[in-house]
Image (cartoon, rainbow, N blue to C red; front, side, top):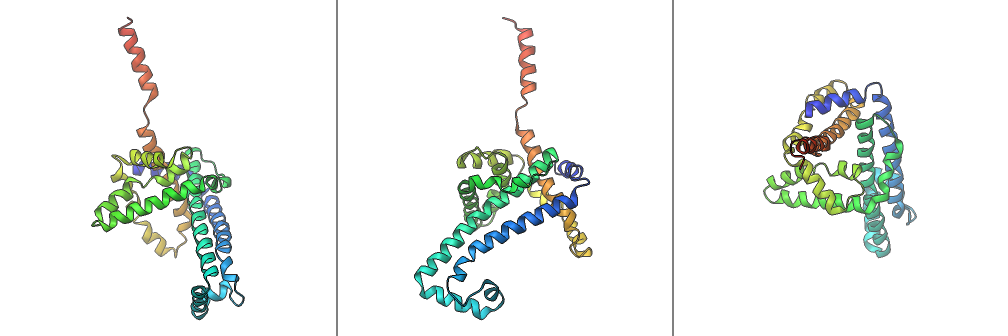
Length: 250
């Protein structure tokens, strides 16, 4: 199924690789820039600090931390703006998953997909934070449980993008249902791109222009193929019922 998904992805992005790459690059840059501005507001509360100076001069960063430690209000603002900014970053990730699901399914590119998940920001944040906590706890329990949970809920981003109507509990259950019997495929998927590391190296990173659209679309195709495999075939059921009625009309 991994090979099939990758072949389908190549077909879906044919003649639109650069356009998809540029769209993702620009949209993610804009979202990241806006979030960075929002999260840096506390840095400008106190005069004499600038984000550029803090990032480029370690002594200014140390000075800012000392100011924060002695100013309870500023420390609270840093915590609040940082927390809210982190929460707002999750929908951007789901938005990218939604974008590639549309590319993988219908071959359509919609920039609006990146913003749609923001209507479910709280739910997305709870699910993704919950996923991180579950995996972290599993990693503390001799690593293997962490890997198991990571694979079990690996399709959470795609489920959140594809099925926004589901509750938090239903989202986890759907991701677990889809991964059941498919954990090996999900595990193998990133390793199947191993040779691309050499291509990226010899092209000085230029291969990423193709790899990002290709890999993301292939992951979306893998999700769609697993979803199709796990969906009951209603036509088959209807046909069986029809044959049964013909054999046993009474």
